Image (tube, rainbow, N blue to C red; front, top):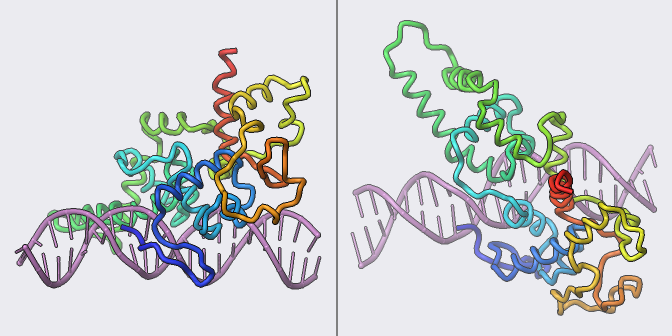
Length: 261
DNA sequence: AAGCGCGCCAACCGCAGGTCA
DNA sequence: TTGACCTGCGGTTGGCGCGCT
């Protein structure tokens, strides 16, 4: 499945990802975040383009990404959202925690469309008194959607299990779910000054030994390319401005843990 | 067993929009 | 204001896997 690995004219690898590449990307993003997708492959020791890395991370390596096993509730929700939003796969994906736009798009084309066609055909061949409307397909779609205008309890559970409150506006919800990283300011990152707040302590704990463990994933790049400002005591490289991917996950974890404290 | 066709899905491509200097 | 750069989105494609003949 997928594309055979090959190299483009710039010598960058294309096609299916190996587990070794996955490991490199996962390790790098979990540690440093995706501060710049274009530059990231170089730092992570991958001969891929940034876009490819981004896609791989978003669709497969990101934590909490669900693979396959769509429930009927999810299917109905996709149907309803597609009716409302059209081919806005990313917006649809934002309402389905753990699902990616690419996967939903594929699922739509391979399963749901087929299911609708089948239902449509069955509807047409059933003996009926009333007139069959011009677009039976659309009608079925609408009927299906109307049945699920109010989310059934199971769907509520799905939404409530999402990291964010369902009370958020769709745009907030969407942007929050699609941007799976948080930007941490310098003050939030300073942990050795002894004045750490609870949140920064929590963050420190969750991040673990980020500041003390050198990341040695990439042994191939030319270290002279990087300024000395990128060097820290541990002798490893990091970009000038850091985004912590999964910062949001971390944040939600912190929020979840908060009542226990 | 071999050949063929098709379904499925991972990944690519091109474009649009946002940001920044 | 503009152009370069980056990210994200949606459409499309390549090719593996599997069922059918």
